[in-house]
Image (cartoon, rainbow, N blue to C red; front, side, top):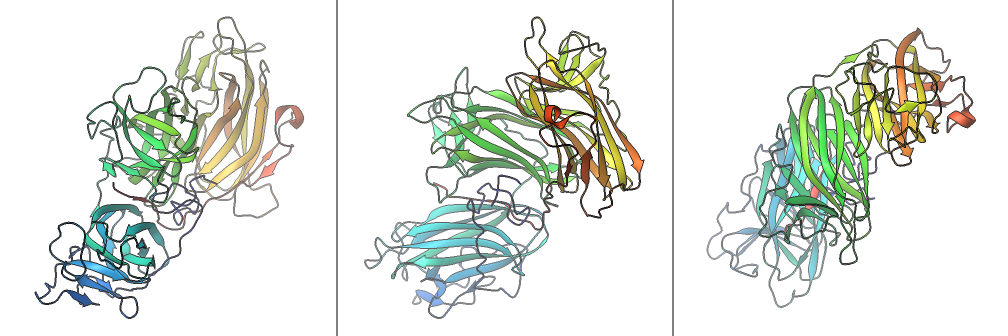
Length: 598
């Protein structure tokens, strides 16, 4: 289950970056108003129509298309500065909400994409209300009230001038949606004012043009800014957590260990996110790469934090990448590389969301790149399972090679790749070359098309690296085997293997029951190791055995370990093992985010 657990509540019910929804809670939909018609664009966001007569200062429950208003004990309407005064210079008309449960709403027809809702809010200026406040809730829901797309609460202090606010959200199902402004709590004399509401379809880009966060240009290296967007990037800070912010910093403001220059993005505290929307026009393999660091110790605050990176389809809600990155205080910038298989063109959102941090601790992000790698190969057999391509000298090692159909990922200075037999040495008599998983979070993967239901056999060889002259790293590491369905289901195979330093190659196999045809990704992922210790993988094959062997009838794939080796020394689980894993099924379209613009 993902660690981003409320942002994407209805797309996946499991994503937890605070882009509109607060951590650990699922807000209630409150539609006090139900518009009877919907429009493709938002008009009259400044509430200037109809124009009020000079002698009329306040109109309750007016006919102001396309908006509707509450009436009765908690009324709303439109006013002029002669009706409800506002601090500062203000001309024209604006909406007001008077008392708890007062609301205004509008219905909008929307296509798939990322939208921004912007508005200004203020607190009425009067002698009786000074010091009082209200809580303004902004929601976007489907018109049939089955999906909550975005939710954010804002505190409005009476006497405060108009301030700009922005809410970002993602629509993954075309249809009609209700944008509502509701007062969920208010002091006795509080009146909340709303003006200049806009609803904008934000652009999705085919490439990331400012992965180095060079815009906006800071006036000095000691400056920091908290933008809501610095196109193509969107920055999100939870308005309910004042100490948590996302933004852009000069290199001399948040200190970084080692050489650093220019500008970079930062995630400070808990519940903050940066994101970008990508328009993928060609299915295939894409590379998502960036630099990551932990803030150096300064002012009693450091960089101990964990953030999660996700690539999510807006059309289906499927998660193409879900990866956690841990930062520690003083960790210098290092490369983080990922290859991602996207089977369908369309809109995708890339999220960097901090999910764990001590207050004030910061992760730093820089030089984010997104590039097309290849068209990718998905086939019913595993080719190049002996990793003989590309051919490399026996004394060399290549990280993230072009080894179709395999993909390699990891965090530098370690990662995954292919080694010659004289570089990452294996105990015993061996020749040729093989894949390796070096350090924590290294993985290799390939795409498999499964045209028939039935029982399949997965075979591979596994060993622990032996120390060699000049290369003293060992082989202690624990890796898992995962089979992920490309349709959004996620099966974690219940097979974890631990290799020890200098353990020789051993033959391993597993029987896999496939109940649903489709396209799957096979992953070997090392999740525990010491330093640059490396696990060696070789001779991977995938073979159809025949009709289902298992007598049980379930809707999920399952896997049974039939290794001939003792589980006490070779695996972290008993053998044989059957695990049906956990399937996450996306059910509806919600993302995103709110940000209090200061």
